[in-house]
Length: 353
Image 1 (cartoon, rainbow, N blue to C red):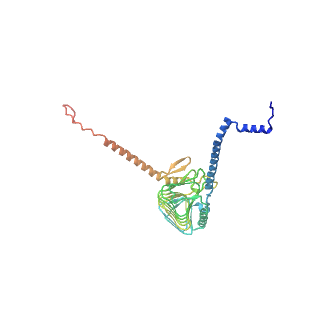
Image 2 (tube, rainbow, N blue to C red; image 1 turned 60 degrees about the vertical axis):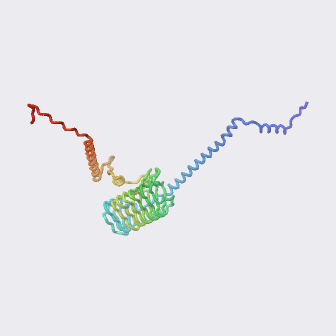
Image 3 (cartoon, helix red, strand yellow; image 1 turned 90 degrees about the vertical axis):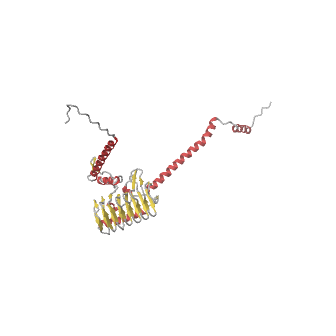
């Protein structure tokens, strides 16, 4: 009887063959099937994280790319010019009026601040304006403003138009995304022009005190334009009939021309946050932008202003009476006329008068 004992080499070879041909279990098969799906999900999650980080970096670069422009001595001025200031009609400005080195102011605009005509403060303000305009022009750009602002929306940042910039119709929107300190700077190579009845719209915490328009030559605001921000023009600025400005018109070398305009100040609080606006300015902005009845804050309530509000009330009463009279005539015309009744014969003894 052969009772030979297998060698160690034969035992190891047998075990190797057994292990190589051992059928896989169900768990092993499922794990192999799950592995590609796990890897795909892991890759997808990593991609989302990287995309989110990239978006955050892009937005941060845009928001941090714009820093507020310090106006220095020019900050208190609604209008500042170099050669002349010419006005037509009842223009009202809530800040100061300044002119240097010129001395001619015509048309008698209503200045609720102070007037500085070729004095020390006016000259200091002009110097501060030159510095501010240079600072704004040297800010690193975050992108192009395009040629026409109509129906565009901008996040905080610095935007450049190499030549002229136009707001042809409708409005342009500035979106602060909830940050009251968000800054918007527009660098314009030559001219800034707005069409009639156009507007600059501020949303999600955007404030006029943080909006700056650096203009290489001249700016012209169209009739009825509702404009927001500080214009710093190298040459002249013209505000046509009924244009309203929540900000400033600052011209370095040439004239500022006004016609029946309202210019309200726009000053950011020194500690940041909401800009400071008086109740009178709020009422003026409301009247200018809506054309409706103005109100002045007094304690917890509001009271209609005299003048425009009384005129509006009389106008409404007249229209109500006109509508009632028109409805009455319409009902009367729609009602058929009854035929005349025949006269009754007189009876004996009846009273005939």
